[in-house]
Image (cartoon, rainbow, N blue to C red; front, side):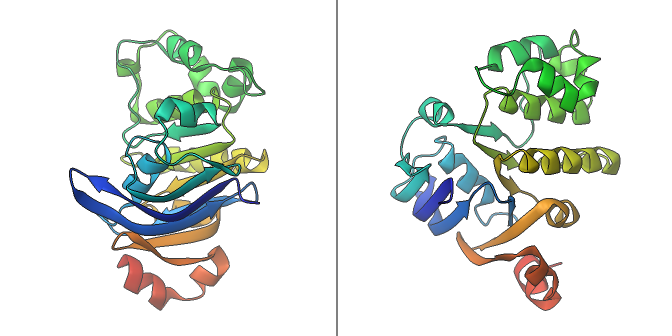
Length: 230
């Protein structure tokens, strides 16, 4: 059974519907990359699964338990971690303080996170606003991991980062997927997405227009061009 099962999800903002019946699943068998042009609802999907946007219809099941409409803290306690778009680290808090407030009991400890992301170990006393964009992104990932999630949602983790940092993020995602964390990756960087994902879900007009394996997606460049404009 998939750890995440989204069915017929409808949601939006201030009376405007953005998602028009989204179906998506994710399990521990590899990263699911959610692709699509700007404005098709990718971030809204992540925010709705996380409880930051309340759905008007549909189902979000985590481990078979219905979570649609629950609060973000309840969803986090159910084992969902979020790496938000734009990183959203707390400017006045040090790296160490970020890690302390995020930590929950489980296999992901501070020591294990710093082993995965050693640069953070060198920056423990630095404030959030003293970090580079890449360091902030690693901190956002570390913060999410310390909640010990079963499911990790990442929204545009490569946004604004240098290629060398994007490559580091790809390495981290491969390791996390290998450790059995279910991962949903919303990404505009097609190279990053296809290098780490097992499946691709392409959104268009608030729906998943295509859900297929990465190799099948690569084999049909015309379809990719029609859906993504690349």
